[in-house]
Image (cartoon, rainbow, N blue to C red):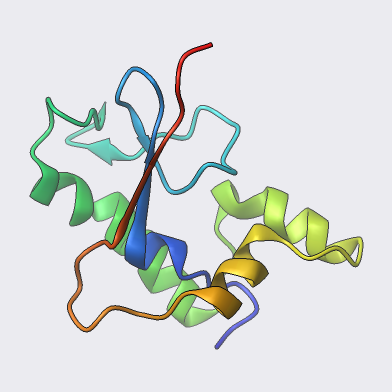
Length: 111
């Protein structure tokens, strides 16, 4: 696989406490998954439209092509410093599901 590939966008969606969706919990910026130009919100946006949005399809295609994904900069920074990133850990510990459906949904709880 490429140096930019991460399994998370193929198995996981992360949600904030308000339901807005991101690629994973390591995306700290306001880069939410977009559906029809709006932030995808779990429970309000159709799940199929979130999982198969142009945003998610583009991220997956870029990872397969070896192109860096802006939202993944935290992992790339860790790797450049010689640290194990969440991307590397996930790639070592998870495998691609038989079907193209997510196997994980992570959420951030309110404090």
